[in-house]
Figure 1 (cartoon, rainbow, N blue to C red):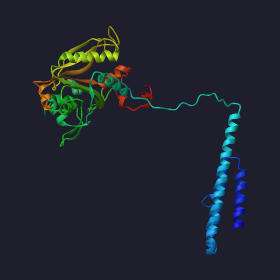
Figure 2 (figure 1 turned 90 degrees about the horizontal axis):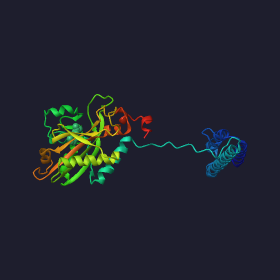
Figure 3 (figure 1 turned 180 degrees about the vertical axis):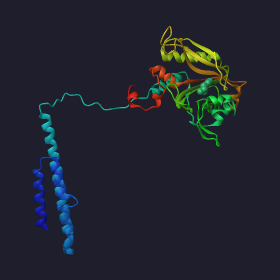
Figure 4 (figure 1 turned 90 degrees about the vertical axis):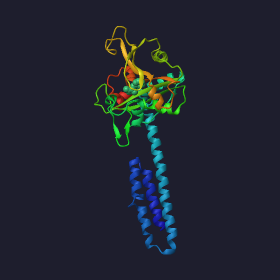
Length: 340
Ligand code: PHE
C-alpha cells in the first residue's frame, strides 16, 4: 500500500507543479480526487486488504488525499498571484482608472413627496397615522355617511374582497378618519398617507392603485379659516412662496360644507399646460367634518368641530416632477424610477 500511495503522491504533485493554468489544475484534481479518480480507486481496493490492516490503509489514503488537496490549493494561489502580477505589469494597465460604479437603487418619487409632506405636517404638530388597506364597508362607506344605495358609492368603483363579510379594498384614505376619531381624544391633528384602490379602467390619469393623504383636525372651535390657513402654510413650505387659494363648493357626504380647494398655478402667470390655461390647479377636496361622522367616531359634535382634506398624492407627485402618465408610478419600470 505505502508503495502505491507514494507512487500516486509523486505523480499528483508532479502534475500539479507542471500545471500552468487553473483549468489544467481542475483536470488534475478530477484525475486524482474525482469520483472515478485514482485516490477513489485506491480507497475502493480496501476490500482486498486483510482486516487488521484496513485502518492503517484508510488512514494512509486519507493522508494522500489531503496532501494532494493542499498542493492544489497552493498551486492555485500561486497561479492567481502570477496572473495578477502579469496584469499589473502589462503596458495597458492603468491603476488610475476609476473603479466601476456600484449600481444602487433610488427612492420612488412618491416616497420623496410623502417624506417631505410628513416633515411639513409633523412640524405643524400632526400625528402620522396608518390604516388597513383591506377595509370594512362600515369604515369606508357607512360611517362616512355613505349608506347603502347612496349615489356617492357609484363614484367609488370598489374592489370587493368578500361581499358577505363586507370586506373591500379601501377606495380612499377617509376611513382612517373614523379609526382616528375612535382612538384619539380631541383635540388632535393627523395625516394619513396611503394606498387606495378603485376598480377603474386605467389610462394616463386613472390607475387602479393610487395614493392619497388624508388630513384630519378636530378640536373646539375649529373653522374653515383654520383649513385655509393650514393649506396655505403647507403650500408655502412646498413651493417656498405665498400662493393664493380659493374654495369652490364640493359635495362629499362626510363633510358639510364641502369644498374643492384650488391653488394659483405655481408654474405660470397667464396660463400653461399644467393649469390648462386657467391659472388655477385643483389641489384637494376638503370640508368640515360632518356631525354624523363625529358621532359615529364617538365625538360630541356639540362640543367639537373639525376639518378634513384628501390630498391626491399621485397627482401631487405628477405635478412636482412633471410626470404626464399616472401609470408610470406603479409600473415598476426601472428606466423611469432611476431618474429620481
Ligand atoms: N376621500 C374623498 C375621495 O377620495 C376626498 C375627501 C377627503 C373629501 C376629505 C373631503 C374630505 O373622494
